[in-house]
Amino acid sequence: MLTREDNELITHTGPGTPMGELFRRFWLPALLPSELPEPDCAPIRLRIMSEDLVAFRDSSGRVGVVSSFCPHRRAPLFFGRNEEGGLRCVYHGWKFNTEGACVDMPSEPAESSFKDKVSLKAYPTREWGGVVWIYMGPAEHMPELLPRMEWALLPAEARSVGKSLQECNWLQVMEGDIDTAHISYLHGGRPPGVPKPTSATGAVDGAPRLTVIDDDIGYAYSGRRNMPDGSYYWRVTRFVLPMYAFIPQSDWPRACTGTVPIDDYHSWRWAFFFNAVGGSPNRFGPGGGMPRQTGQYTLGDGTVIDAVLPPQTKANSYMIDREVQRTKTYTGIQGIGMQDRAMTEGMGSICDRAEEHLGTTDVAIIAARRRLIKMARDLQDGLEPYAATHGEQYTVRSLDAVSPIAELETILTAFSKELLAPV
Image (cartoon, rainbow, N blue to C red; front, side, top):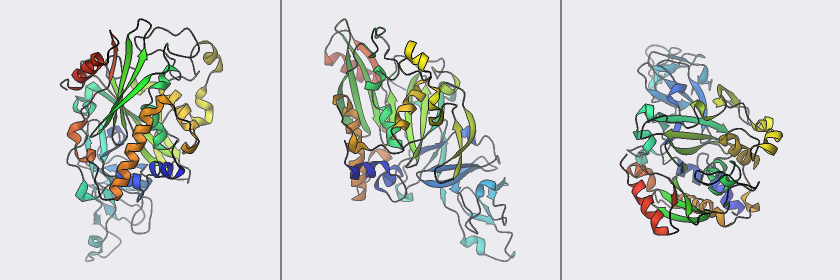
């Protein structure tokens, strides 16, 4: 459990909050390039880290992410004209480039220099690895390298990138991705290599033994399950700061997730599938489940953002089928992602962790919380996060394997070889 004070510190990420300032030291995934498909296309609305922004792709293809409101009379720039190298407010014609500079002010006399004194908040962006990234921290601390994760280093045809809106705080989503124990139950209880369970309680061994090994950019943790023949089934997950999880898979393609706060009550869950040996980059096919559609989502304060939305939502109980639950699957909810959402969103907008009762399979959850809280407090004391400026260390992998004999050295040797494999 966390104290309510610590829970507030780790879950609140708006401007000026300790955790918000920590996140802002990192390059964060913000958009799919397909959301801004061509130069001078329509702008889109987004909220990230509790800030309302508008993104547009200018005539030369550069992506700008700027404040939602024109600094003149606070008109919404979403309705602006994306034209000739800038976004023009349709209220009085003021125009801004991707760096936030006012490049035209037709409502003022031609000889006026007023436009040179007005600017719009704008954040640096980079487009790489199938993602549009944003940096929202102090300019003097902007990392030179983006995180060199394997999925971003591979050719475009070897990866599949998507995101989905989550109706809850970011930490609930991220903690679900670093929780190995729940796969024995929530997702049907049949990990690769484990015989089909004969009881409703899930996998053959639903109580994995966890070990956490810290490093400079996060940690690796193993979940060890007993196999019927006396061997061990291992799932080694990589948690990478501040919010990524490399989730074990038995074969290619592999998976990575990342969770970015929209505000304290909503988040984006990014999913990165990749295949370094050829073949499909996504084991679940396009979209990773039921069809999704582009639409609008209204946040709690009435602000509208543009989002990719699934048909299954909290409002329709994720289309749970009780007959399927009774006869075929553990949950009756279609899709691993939707099964996760039903649990994490069901905890409420912000989970009250003071009411938790954590057990032995929650070691990785506890380790992540402690690490993040310490880093946020260290930053308040002037200690910058090492991981943010060492993107070259982010080339890591997870591991899924069965050791033929029940010896720790066996799996650690295999783990080391896998982590050091060339990419």
